[in-house]
Amino acid sequence: MIDFRQHIGQAMHLKRWTRIALVVGLVALAAGVGFYAYRYTMRPVTLTVAAGSLDGEGSRLVSALAAKLGSTSNSRIRLKVIDTGTPLGAAEAFAKGQADLAIVRGDATDLVGARTIVVITHGVLMMIALPGQTIDSLDGLKGKTVGVVGGEVNRRLASVLDSEYDLTRAKVKFVDLRLDELPAAVQGKKVQALLLVTPISGRYLTMLRNLFPRDAKRSPTLLPIESAGAIAAAIGAYESFDIPKGTIRGSPAIPDDDLTTLRVPVYLIARDKLDTDTATLLTQTIMETRSNMLGEHPILAQISAPSTEKDAPIRIHPGAEAYFSGDVKTIFDKYGDQFFYASMLLGMLSSLAAAFWKFMMPEPEGGSPPPERLHQITRRIRDAASTAELDQIEDEIDEILGAELSRGKRDTIDAGALQVALSRLEYLIGQRRRMLEANPS
Image 1 (cartoon, rainbow, N blue to C red):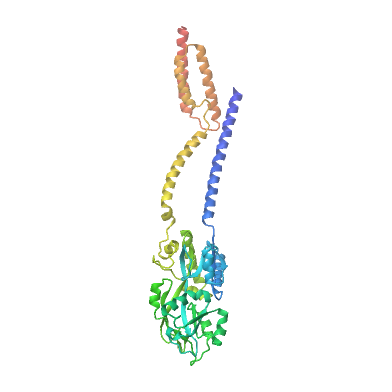
Image 2: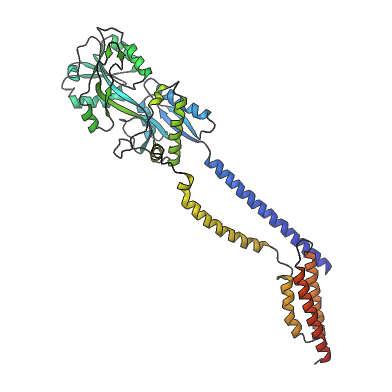
């Protein structure tokens, strides 16, 4: 009997260590899952961006921005730049699904599913009559040749002007010019006017001034687009804009007064399927990073919020709109319902864990706690029909007591309850034994 109780005690001791190992394992697993979830949530997001411009400045600008983000340790946005050579190439790469983001002009076509993040800059239309020409309006272009700088990039704009002013009937001829062909075309007088679209910034204005020698008697003339308002109302991609006096040159002033023309926004676009939180983070990162790059890239000062109107040519992304409107949701705003249901689920899991723990806990020998088993023996004592049966009951009581004393090495024994139960049973056994000896029948 003694060996049997020792084996039982060892088995119970082993189960306890098994339970401890199980609990430690579950805690480690939960901690590991939580750490992985945190790292997954805070991991950097890499987005591919297609960019291109006639002079290569667009790709260099985005590459500089990508390098800045990559060197910032707390930035969660990473940009991978794809140089497409031209704005049209960027739009095509975006349309083919080769990039998550793209730098495109507002008059680009085939931008289904695109949403704006920020306005990078505006390209301003400049219709320039070359020095020596007596042209002061678009009507004066009759029979002249206009060089379209950038060719395919600006063909749509040339077509819009042609349609508005009926330039084909006036026998105006449009020819494509690459950027590197521009100086020779101006000096060789192959064209009488230029159509070009450029941001109004120091870099591009300097390039334009260097194209024409400083000569008060032979200065270029900017031609107004008097129908700019009507064109902008009909074609949402364009906006009416006034070029300030003296923008190209101050003395003599070119233009000599504020001049009405058209401009087209240059967007950073993303897919409408881009996660809202990622779009918000991207917008925030760009707006916060640009201030550190203005010394090297002053054009970044022109970055602004896109239109939030529903009829905008390219609608703003909800994530960018949330940033510019100051409606960025906190984690509790976004996941309030999840937190509520998670707390309910946690309560249920706690109850299940308690039940599971109770199930895993080893029961005392015999199933029920010793005081309860001893109490159940009282009825058997009263019903005992012989002293032999009482002897058997006393042996069983000894086994229960021995097992309880063995368990007491590891757990606290309820000595008071056990003592009361044993005294009660001892009294009942003695009383029943005297009754049986007095009346054996």
